[in-house]
Image (tube, rainbow, N blue to C red; front, side, top):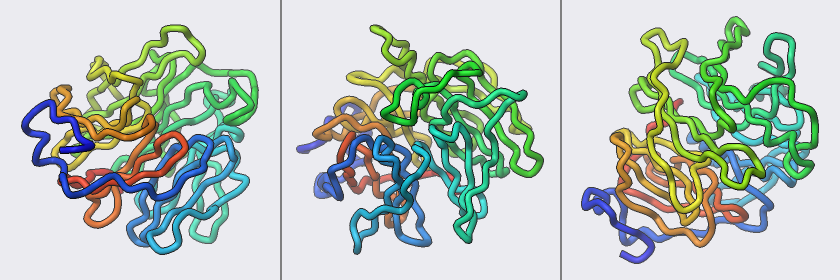
Length: 301
């Protein structure tokens, strides 16, 4: 099976040997935050250093959706289908309304400015969960140098009340987020201190409380090698598909590596989309790829 590495026999039926890796677009500086709009049959993703959000469609290819974008990084959709985005330059979480207006949902915690929100997910109850490392304010390449006012936290936002709370505060650099299909678990990428010679890098998993308001029992779930985990998504069975230095790694709910999809460059982020949510879109450094797999994504909404 060219292009795949089978580590566990169960991975055989999860990929399709006749479905090859497709190059959809290239020429980007650094890609992140892919989100699929099934109703519009399009993918949005960020080209962060170029300060733009791109849109890809099967018919039209890649085109600019928003520029300047305030150096947006991660994206998702809320329960009404609106775009939720993480802004590095604005140091905030925003919502794009149906008429195109942009509403700032959160930019401060206890009076202090957020760092540079990185990734965001929406739970089925409508609450918005996001990571806030300082990466976007540590260089001019992905946002612009500014002073950090808060630790690197993971937050929960209730958009109905505006209440913002810290759900995890023991990270050096929280990054990608993903709920398990039943929302009882939250996976968080720890990508460590930027510029550190040996940063702490692994995937952690937390138990979500019954009322969906807090996290507990944080523990290391898996360590990706080569490279590290940045962004990931679960399929309907609870397997975690994550970017890695050599492509995409598929990890089961017990934390065991099942197999790999080989990609010519490191994959930072990915999402399920396309027909029946069985197409993986890959933000691989400077190139957008896609590949069909034999699993369906479990992302919300």
